Figure 1 (spheres, rainbow, N blue to C red):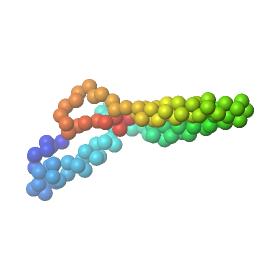
Figure 2 (figure 1 turned 90 degrees about the vertical axis):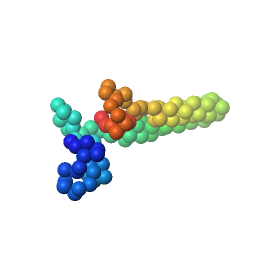
Figure 3 (figure 1 turned 180 degrees about the vertical axis):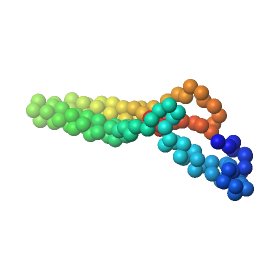
Figure 4 (figure 1 turned 120 degrees about the vertical axis):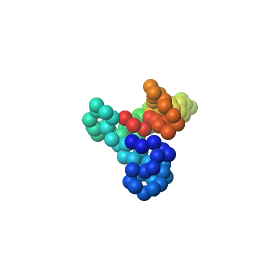
Amino acid sequence: MPRRNDKCPCQSGKKYKNCCMEKDLEAAKFAPRPGESYTEGPDPAIATWKIAILALAALGIVAAVLAFAFDLTRLAGLVLTVGLLILILFAAFRNAPTVRKNPGNGGNIDFGNRS
């Protein structure tokens, strides 16, 4: 792979960074790493939303039972509030960025989007 300021290998006469670098970097995102084969797995964002929907349903059921069966509306409100806060924190911090072993320069920042 050419360096940023080298002439582009497509023979356009432009620097690589102004011609084909972006396209090559985009293609490299989806290529398997050396020694790994490409495997398609579940999208973590979808899994997070499935968990969120199930947790909201469980919170609703618990709050409804507390409010209507036991007439504990304050406790039901507290359960919903605390449960929603925990759920928001879970969704926010579930897919935290990974720390790279070899940080290199700023051109190869990995924000944890790759599996």
